[in-house]
Length: 445
Image 1: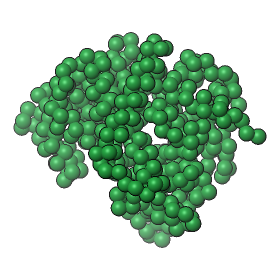
Image 2: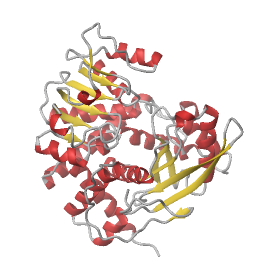
Image 3: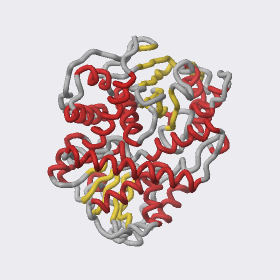
């Protein structure tokens, strides 16, 4: 993330302010989310002329916390897991960020996620800094009770470092409401005050916000609409769209766009990649997936199953990669046929691919703007919990649209001022806002 190296943190509490004067990060043979995040930050820092002191502060994390998470398994055995919380920058306010449970989790990924959260909050006008935490274990190998114990023990281990005024938890995925409920209940049992506003993405019954499940897709819809209009991609309702991912983000985006009359010509999940140039039957596909856990490979209506390597290369007006990082990379960027890319996942376009697409004249709407709807609604949930008042769904939706549109307008103004890409503009604006906040706060000794 912002530490200039990729080593594991040492000790239980590691304060991450490594002194480094590097002004850029060397390109690696293997592109990573950490590299993607750092490339964007370094470019923004260069363009706005950050001085060395500001650069060092923003390039590094405020704090990195490492804990051992002992878990009693269902068979009675004891398993020791590694848990982390990365707190990147508190210049704009308390930290906000996801809890990830993943067997392939790397500390560098958490650093990247936490920094992305800082830039995303700044860009969207949210008064939070970025954080990210996680436990290194494959959740799919755990029973429900084991997963619950993992979340509860991690939360208990972090009680001194998280809370409504310090570090607010958010879900990694929109359907992680159970994880957030367990975290909230654990915090409530160990604190004297109300813990509701310390956790977002909760079930509605526990103070969760309306629109949480659809928040990312709703935000994507707003940005896709204004970006398509800006780039002249066709009349309203006439876009052809390829969506990688059929889960909470990709599936909901497909449902929303289909209902508005757009043609979703490509949709994929981890099992199947579907293409129909006349438009897929999205309600039918999503209903099948809800029942069977995967997309149907029925080709009776003219739909074809394409190879995974060919899916992102399908011709379309808009490509929305909503599944994995580095989906578009240097080895397939030359073959992309979309007229515009809107990033639904974190870092789905690598730095090298970004440069290729820019050369080819294919605009990319970056993740920290496009998929910011979840962060905005998490902020709304925090506000509602603090005031003890629940907003109506139409109020949440209207305010979400306003925040997304204002972020787009501010990004476009920055793009014109600096004569740069949208990705560069989002990071220039975000880094500038955080740097100004840090400068106003000063350095406390």
